[in-house]
Amino acid sequence: MAITREEVLHVARLARLELREEEVVRFQDQLSAILDAVSKVAELDLSDVPPTSHPLAIANAWAEDEPEPCLPLDEVFANAPDRVDDYFGSPPA
Amino acid sequence: MIDTLRLTAEGAKELLARGEVSGAELFAAYRAAIDARNPELNAFLTLVDEPAAGGGVPIALKDVISTKGVRTTAGSKILEHYVPVFDATVAARCKAHGLALLGKTNTDEFAMGSSTENSAFGPTRNPWDPARVPGGSGGGSAAAVAAGLAPWALGSDTGGSIKQPAALCGTVGLRPTYGTVSRFGVVAFASSLDQVGPVAKTVRDCAWLYAVISGRDAHDATTVDVPPVELPDGEDLRGVRIGVPRQLNEAEGIEPGVKAAVDAAIARAAALGAAVEACELPLSVDYGLACYYLIAPAEASANLARYDGVRYGLRSPGADFGEMVMATRRDGFGDEVKRRIMIGTYALSSGYYDAYYGTAQKVRTVIRREHEALFERFDVLVSPTSPTVAFPIGEKAADPLAMYLSDVLTIPSNLAGLPGLSIPCGLSGGLPVGLQLVGPPFSENRLFAVAHVLEQALGFDVVPERLR
Image (cartoon, rainbow over all chains, first blue to last red; front, top):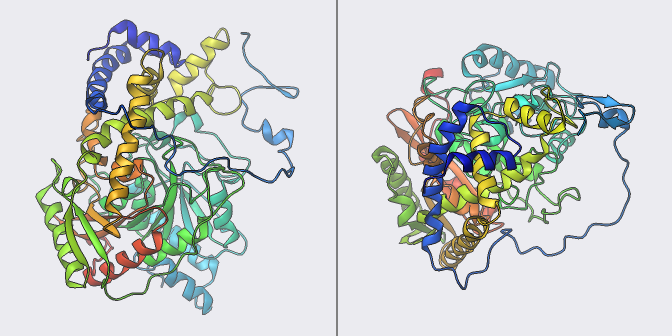
């Protein structure tokens, strides 16, 4: 199934991904080919088949409610591009 | 003189125990091998200069595993300068066992790829033939072990990123049962599939390293209690029921030389007493790839939303918050990562969710059931790990779908959450061929036992011919 240039741009916006013009053109072709290939999943009759979200049948993985020390603030911010006091800095929304 | 090309982790442990070498000497020997061969291979992205105190057997970790104070890039420009402030649970467990970190190994960006060519820091080359890929995404770990740059290593496997590089580099690689190894502190790709596992020269080393890293972790709610690991030492395969799924052994694209080596290994298993019988996985192989390439990108698109230039990682300039985020992701992510984010976002977007992601999850149930049914009759399923031997660098780089086919034989059991072990079983055109052994959940001990017997019988020389 061919996807349109507009769809490529729409999906990129949803993904917060700025694409270069060359990428828009190439991804339009490649995504169409990949979506064609993966659409094969629609061939099967799956009306009575439940979905698998997780390969093991784990329900409610409980842990003891024991507090552990948190990271010190200087470590929390160690990799931050911009620290403003004890906050992460960013350009204005 | 320590021969790092031949020394196993078990051998290294014995040398240390007998006091024949010190931890520092062992570390220095691997460091010398790295200095000699890594410039050609590019298996390591970051090196550790001094062995940690109490240094025992050295180890290399794939660069998706967080290591406190040691740069962790996930092969991505967006994390080029990221230095974790905590250890992943698997890294902490290695430390607690005295394993000395040599460095961090190259990977396709965010573990997305089958050749390690998608790394932002250049491809890793195959020690058997540097013009060829080592497989991926864990090509750095597999190449490091094959070239004697580390006795063993950890990888991570979502669609085949431990097993396939092990096959292409002639090493042993285990993708453990989903839930047996903690992912806490491991850079997330597709969380319903990601597993950490060992890469080594022998099945026994692989089993030992699995014993070090496996088991429940309070920091990862998907982990469970794991049966005690038994180091294998058997000599025959009497009583073992081996299934040979036709679709995995006759899939389109399997090279004749790969098929020949795998068939010979299966014949050897029969000669060693195993009951070998053909069987069927009617839908798993045909539909596995399509199912995987919906589920994995969908989960990746959600996991990678965290790279927004705020808390860590690259930030590119932008006039406002939205522009900054879009520019950061434009500059920080490579081609394949962007492609998968796009596919995943599309598959999860309003109006398409049921048709794509929802349907793929149902197909996953079909695949799981097909495998479950076979394990009523068989202990182990065998096939080639990869349809091909190591391919030339650049051959599939421009064709994403051709690259995706590299994992067609590893993906079905991965979707079912099953453990899979790849061992080298012979050569085709001078390049290693991997045999994949898959078992029911938590059957690692059985896989080790069967693979160890075969490994001894096949006598594959794990040292690349050009380095002997």
